[in-house]
Length: 100
Image (cartoon, rainbow, N blue to C red; front, side):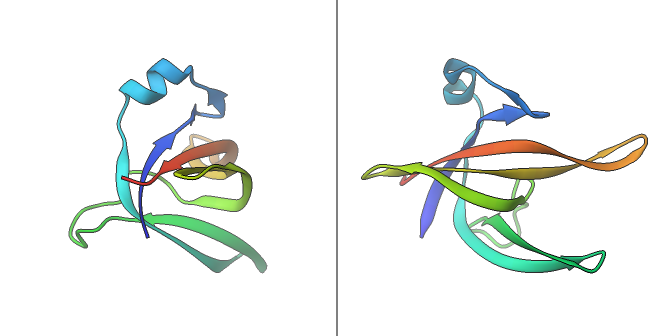
């Protein structure tokens, strides 16, 4: 199912709704799958663009949890993997997903 996804946090810090709503929206299909990293198994939520040539634009959401839902939208929270000078680390991330 196709969704318009708004990212609600930047580097783990919550953005105000005006910044979220006026910021970029990523459109695609939400797909959940499992991956094995370092001997551990994680559930992952990915946004796959409708055009396969296009890049997703947002990082995958690890260990997603449904925070809330309404008739035309849902909100999920999980962890986003970021790369830093000291290596990879994770921060909390939330997605607001609406039907286009």
